[in-house]
Image 1 (cartoon, rainbow, N blue to C red):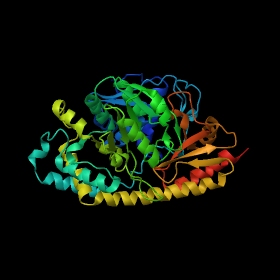
Image 2: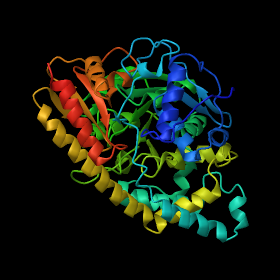
Image 3: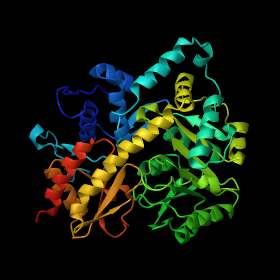
Image 4: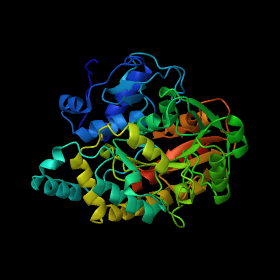
Amino acid sequence: MRELTIHLDQKSRTPMYEQLYEYMKQDIQQGRLGAGERLPARRALSQYLDVSRSTVDQAYEQLISEGYIETKPRKGCYVCQIEGLYHLSGDRAPVKHRTEQEKPQYLYDFSPSGIDLDSFPYEIWRKITRSTLLDDKKDLFQLGDPKGDWELRDTISGYLYEARGVNCTPDQILVGAGNDYLLLLLSTVLGPRQRVVMESPTYLHARRIFRQLGYEVSTVGVDAGGMRMEELGESGGNIAYVMPSHQFPLGLVMPIKRRLELLSWAEEAPERYIIEDDYDSEFRYKGKPIPALQGSDKEGKVIYLGTFSRSIAPAIRISYLVLPSRLMSRWESSLSRFSSTVSRIDQTILNRFIKEGYYERHLNKMRGIYGRKHDILLSGLRSMAPILRIHGEYAGVHILAEFTNGMTETEAIERAGKEGVRVYPLSACYQEQKRIKGEQVLMGYGVLEEEDVRKAVKRLEKAWMST
């Protein structure tokens, strides 16, 4: 690990976490940070730069989400191997020592992985934290239950039943520091030599984790209902990784017929399972929330994966697995020696945040905020109806814009960039060359303020409608 020389401009309109993210991303793209190189610890970097820990956390989480860096349990963050990957800025191969004027400048960033942290309930979180620490509970500084504190697991169990229709007991839940760790833990339960099947396109970071775990990973196509069952049957896989309530990145909702077909596929063999990643199910703006697939599972075939990083804040780093009873028994018999990776203090704070009603109020507030941004974005894009179609709306915090006038994905990104607006290529979510028909870009609206969404869309209209 080497020390980074970074200069952040506190007077800039660009948030400091974004400045740090851009600096490190460019260093990785240009080879100044090589594959496999260890990055500074988050706390150490925040002290070195004299910025808050959350600033570093946000920058690191964005880099992790985009696949530039990866976390290794108990070791830290390392640079990923990205040679030959598509450059999101749309530039040609980057040249070393680019001048500041040559670097892409974005006034508005439609990041599909960003969330609105300005609306985080800081005062409430501080109040619960102070109250928790004032109690002088010595047991909070002990390791606690390897599964996670029973009180938090009981609260999560109740919330999942009420909000997502998930049927589970507290004893079926494992709490861990992020989805990456829980997938690592799951691999010890499932054992080696698994064959995972994922949709295409999909969340490539999960694919990378499965590959690093030594699993054979293949992809199958999707249609309007999600994963194609015929291709799944021909794949020879025994684990299907899906996002049935809001597929990333296409935004599809898996209908009940396809869900039942998927469950039937899993029931055909004893060691077949479905991993349901329910990463942003809380945010839906039209109709009722889509129930979780796990609620329809009668044979213990669905492994349910959820997180609070998307609904509260990335730095919370608390996720959970709901294991079928058979797999939980396997964990308890041979793997319960693993210690929980989430401190009992953080678990207690989160438990109170949910149990005392703050989480529900926060979600309602964020649905309103994201819903307004969603409506502003769609309203602005209607003026471009002659050249594009919108997909994946009414849920999550991103949409897809598909061009119908012959404009390519690359051209759309370059035109938007010239107007100071950053949009993202759908092609970056494909591991292989096979792609669905159409040229599409991803547009996330979580980070932008409402007025910024309006201004950005006007710039996109100028960029994409001009001949």
